[in-house]
Image (cartoon, rainbow, N blue to C red; front, side):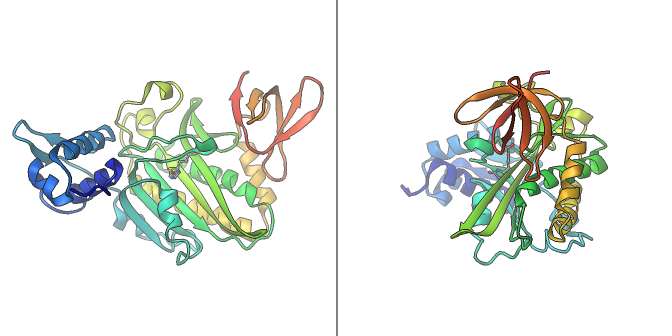
Length: 327
Ligand code: BTN
């Protein structure tokens, strides 16, 4: 037995063994010996993978059966992608801690525009250090960028939210809107979210890693806290969509926005975000780490900050906060 195997590392090993290669059936005891864990721990890992939506069955005779599983079709994703920067290299993983961390491991060799996509994450993260549920059927991806345009990279997440909304519009014929700062919602329910993590060398921006999570074909039951708050494309349409085609469209739209950003068109990109930002004009409650404010969301500033007029008449800019639409 290897004491180094955390339960989560064990899940990854088992998922890789069962879904990346190998037979469609394996005895639990055999699997346990291959991954050097006890049958009990292996059984628990199988249960956890099933909770994440992996199609696995454990028979009474302790045989693990792999059922039909369709990972993102990488050939379709790469075919005619034809982007300039984003997507020049696309890495695929099965089950990782977070695509943000996995891409960060490649940061020294990764070119601007490198993309990493995973089928599932066991510690996916959202904004404000929240956890992000990343079950089978979603599009969980991160993009590493080294922008050369010197200012306003703060608006890139908004530009990428617009790009993602366009791609979802094209492929799924839905019309998501942006809930500030960069959630995409359909019928006021979250269908996608973006996360930006910047890394500096001294005062200089070294690179950015953008994380995008799209609830594409999610079949697992949502935890109680997310019911009525989140949705998925498949739920909205009543059918699954082709994730490779959607991921490809997203990468193409992001690449287009990135090139426009890099050639100095940040303010155009911001205007496009304003056009589909459902927060503007609403009475909102804005929670920062320190306190809560209520007021009317008036506009977005040049860096994408939300400008809110409080009842005192003062207009306050918010750069990072949690917003609830009240009216
Ligand atoms: C949010 O809405 O709070 C942002 C969610 C971002 C989730 C994505 S999924 C891919 C990437 N890896 C992560 O761990 N998080 C982002």
